[in-house]
Image 1 (cartoon, rainbow, N blue to C red):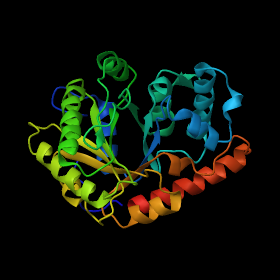
Image 2 (cartoon, one colour):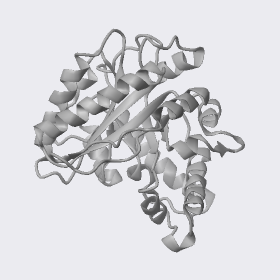
Image 3 (cartoon, rainbow, N blue to C red):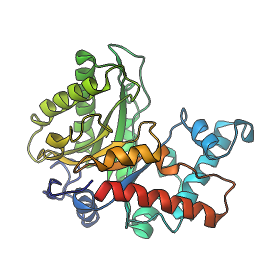
Image 4 (cartoon, helix red, strand yellow):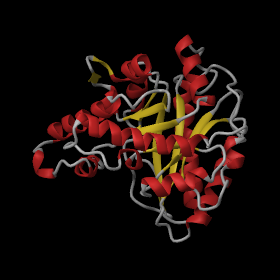
Length: 318
């Protein structure tokens, strides 16, 4: 929920002083720093797309190739983004899958449509999936396509990026390795003139989630203190077990915004936990699309989406 602890806008630079910034970036920076609302996470990749489609009411036998699958998920995302309820009034940003960034919505590049038609700041997911588990965590696979993706993102008017790691156990060495890797890539992303969202997700099924949360906060705080000059990052973290655990991160001068992922909690439970955490806003995926199906009429779809948005917005700003 938004409060006095939200940091001021600072320089009109997405990630660091490497980028001089444009008028659009200045305005988008202000939206991300102080805007009232939340981030919609619409960045399911190949591995999670079948589940997302199934929840949307489209079974596996409805498509027979990756192309058909990705066409269907783009139709779902386009329907959601073009719905009347989906506007910058409550949704301040959206995280896109790379293929969504490269496609069009209503005949316009997806990022351009979001900003020009909806006044929603566009981000793009840049990681290439997770490596095998080691020390209770899964680091990100090496990002072999990052340079080209960052170039295209800048050209298309993307404001920032998101990259996800996964923490299964409260292993201090593993968590430090994840945070070190995230900040190493964040520096490269900032150098390209984009705002990096660092997402080291803690599993809600972790045997001691509270300890993992605490170790993660300590590791992130140490890296934030090392950031040079005006460089800033955003953080996307699992809803914490301990109320207001992320307060030191939210108030840190090197953090533009801290957002929360739902991590498998229901919409109601996600909003209940979020509402108790001052200064934290949502970046939900499954919770946002809960109850939306391909079989609904456009009016039914928009009514349900609007209800979900209202609940998440209220928990993000109360």
